[in-house]
Length: 358
Image 1: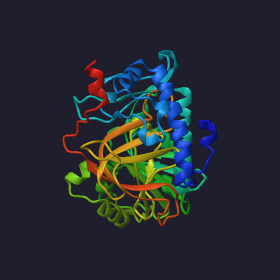
Image 2 (image 1 turned 60 degrees about the vertical axis):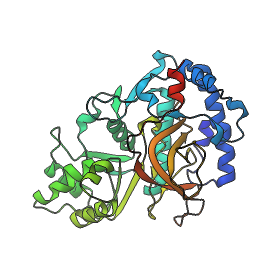
Image 3 (image 1 turned 120 degrees about the vertical axis):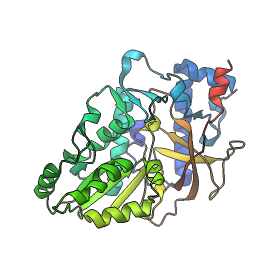
């Protein structure tokens, strides 16, 4: 089945055997494509003596440590085909990942994102309040993870309003006018966790008129490390926002710039879900074998979307645990899991070391 056909499948509709068969065939095809079209990736597979053609299931296919995208330029299409370059978030002075997208890959990422999120918010586009500044997306060819997230989610909005100005200060008058215009309507609010907390929630008390988001659904992601430093738990984050502006429908998500489009949305039961277009595998750190359900380990993320770069199978630097498969009380099929946090002093040694030792 080709990717355009797969993208027509409802994102949480396939049970284990069906999804296993679909992902194995599609990921084998992607691995062979990148092996033949990305010289560095092909060299890595040769050094690892990896033969994707012989993989019986997708868990046996090779994976790249996510750090490799900070150290090398990896692409499987000609330079002139690249229409967008995305960069990961990073601390000042640290290396960032560079992800090269051609037109088809960028379009497929957006289509997958819309289908995944629509399963939670509904098919209709909604008035959208973005808790960020429009300045972050001005350079359309070079996006940070933050800018890419905003641009990707913005397609879900029937009308969009940025809540912050270029100085990261809330535009209270503009926000109130937007809310009044769409009073009584279901609304989408989007932002990154730390941005919402620091630049919106903490400033709400300064606004004399109540900001009422009781009809809104909030989708947020990333930034928990900063909030953990303030001892703010996900439960407290939701409760404080509810008290401050009345919002009750709040969904977190897990995702990475290296696999944009294939996000893992959190359902009303508090579980992160893998869609038909992606999956997570948890591996034991000592030998990279697949961990059992309920066993902590390193998160490997696979995605069917990366066609212009070999980012379809990545070992992250996050620790997590698979909670179950096909039996979440929310009714969605597929694996559901929890992210425990960043691996302390994470430095995954594997494919990148093999390549460097060449």
